[in-house]
Image (cartoon, rainbow, N blue to C red; front, side, top):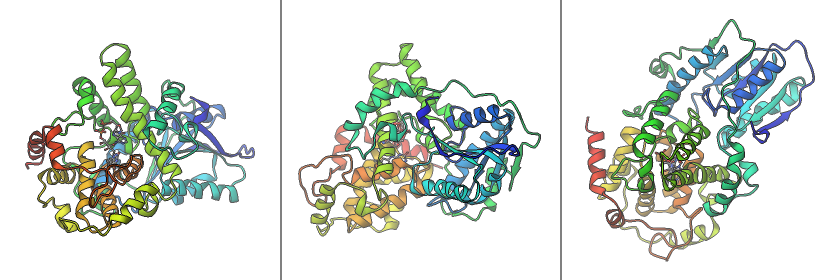
Length: 462
Ligand SMILES: Cc1cc2nc3c(=O)[nH]c(=O)nc-3n(C[C@H](O)[C@H](O)[C@H](O)COP(=O)(O)OP(=O)(O)OC[C@H]3O[C@@H](n4cnc5c(N)ncnc54)[C@H](O)[C@@H]3O)c2cc1C
């Protein structure tokens, strides 16, 4: 593995009484293509100790509801099975991870954590590191990045202006991070292989017992887990990838749906990249399709990670975008809005705009929305809401409530893009000022919108 993925956060003094190595799995909820897991196995093998993998599930994860929890638990059920098949102990706790992990630190020689880039994820890791610094002089801590191709601080040390500034850096570096060569074998396995507060084999049963927001139904279409992610990847590769350059058209269902699985770390971005590179080398996909997919999977996605890392206050209206965008919004905040919909009308998709309504229906029923429709959807909420700040807060709220992949670096970057971040100033117009504007005529001019309406109606019929 490329050594730049690993950061030693804390050195530990030697103590021969330690019982295991501990991998705190939180972001990369998978077995394959998990650099943090492989690093933990390597250390366990070096010092002849067994390995425990820990996962803490908090019922209070910001903005999460049963739709997200079910998807995640379906994935964890499969991950547990794979870990156990590989002789690795799995601890599953129904408590906020940064608290629940504490009791396992004392006997650990080394703690390996995976990276989480959002604020609360960083805070969790910081708290554990801080605790160890104060009380556990003999614990070593490593943090390993397995969520992006090129670690964020390697590719850049500042907030990038846009895809155009990040792209050349990623194109130059990504080859050095094709660095996964299979799951390592653990030398010493443990007799007790599963410690849990509850039964992971029945995710829906567990959901019923959890005190979480149950107001949003689970997706009717998408289910969590590595095998499901692989099914989507294989379908995408065999049916859609060569048409990917035209996947912006919502009338055709040509996108991969992998964001749902990437969000929970159920599949690795590197595994996906390796697949498409192999297809390119064996002439099964066109160069155009490869580059179009690479642009989204690497450039756009890693731009979002750069954004949440370096943009202070990425989740607050006042601080999430550029100053020219804030200025134009100030100038147009009091422009009269022609339509003024209530939150309920927006959420129920009861507006005059049938494309917006279809997009809302898609996400309420399935937990997914097509990328182009996400832009259109957010732009319409801006147009129909009395102020930019209330529009921002509502978009984030709905994004994180209904999208299975919500609460992601991509959520904050995607929404901020609608408010000018990583975009440019356009010709000034009412309400939007210099922000990019989108309308239904544009959709109709470019795409097969009737097909989109038909597709969503069929998908959500029952
Ligand atoms: C207003 C708005 C809100 C968004 N909210 C989210 C969100 O909550 N979670 C989320 O994961 N993405 C979000 N996005 C980004 C993008 O829409 C989704 O990542 C994409 O639609 C996921 O579908 P897919 O996996 O089928 O994409 P594909 O087209 O198959 O692309 C493959 C992968 O590339 C990456 N990707 C694709 N488009 C983008 C993009 N525009 N920006 C960054 N990465 C991209 C994703 O990881 C995606 O899985 C948002 C975009 C906007 C404009």
